[in-house]
Length: 546
Image (cartoon, rainbow, N blue to C red):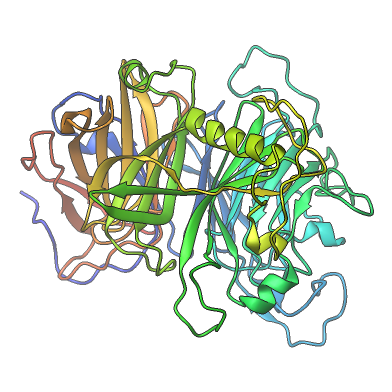
């Protein structure tokens, strides 16, 4: 029998894991054959995506981008850094000599996504004011790294979790393989990014062209720009002068029907004192814009939150768009083709970078979100109230009465925009955890059930069957908890294999176990809460789990 731990400490390594998904109903404990791992000894993982046609896995890291097989065998590795840089250099030293001292700088991957129309990987980093590389999917060969124009610089902020992107214009090709593949260069990238106070350089939200030629100067140009309007939102310099710490952190982005949405976390200017040294409060928002709106006239944002037993949860940690299973759709009065949103919040409105471990999993329907936005737009066009977007407008502007029928497809006009919500859109609380700190979420449909996977900051994966809104508690039932990497957080990106048989998880650091060397045992917990038999694997370098 193998000992649970041998002597000698285990080095710190990042981890990518692949777990075999278990059904939504009670099943026997999983075995070692249900888990595969990948580790790399010389980097830290930041982002993860899976090609929805081939099942190949792409991982963004510090100074690296990796391509792995569906079973987590390394196929290719592409080096992105370190490079000579200085964050004060604008434009970057690759374009113009810089007066500031250059030094070898790590390139932190901040965005990783597949452009299916272009048949390429888009990997955006932190160096050179946030340039992106276009990599060939087959071998990660660098097709281009446009960096000569201001539009090529997305944001030099180094925080890996402050950026989100949504590619639109692909005509759902990935979901409908039989449909004709769109022409390369016909898609657009909606990109939201924390700007680290540099509003003169970077928009916080924009819509960019993804052209066919990866080295073209037209790559990442704004979809529309004239003297007065453009496809972007910038944080006003007045806002940054008043609130130097103001920024918008983009947690999750997705598209649904004719809209693009972002979930964001930003400084609450109504609660935070102007003094930069004072206590900071944050608020979560959901941002919506029409996918075909080139002037951003349709920009609407609403506060988003959840309340459980009288306690407010306002710090968004992670989110996932999904279609409900039959039981949940029936309970919500929706069709199985409607979109819902699972969102994890931390308690309160403080400590964005180190949020409380008291967390709650909540459910929103896109129907309710869109209804709240439509009612708000309608009231503004009736001339009621103000635009109410203080961080962007810096003054109260009255809504202008304009006879207009506001339907579900309304995409704004030059007046009565941009528009802020007057009330918090509240989600339905499903599951509360006061100790582990939930920070990642994904969901899928198994038969007639909706199954939600939640990753925690203590390295656990929780599996929750959601068939309705509690009470009763059985409507959202925790039926299994698996320790993935004990004591270290599961990162935000959790992605399913195309056949939904596996889920891929990231951990940026493997815990250093006391009295442990090479071999440690994992004790899975079955659906009845009892420990299963010990399962061991050989610890190597950084790990990725499948």
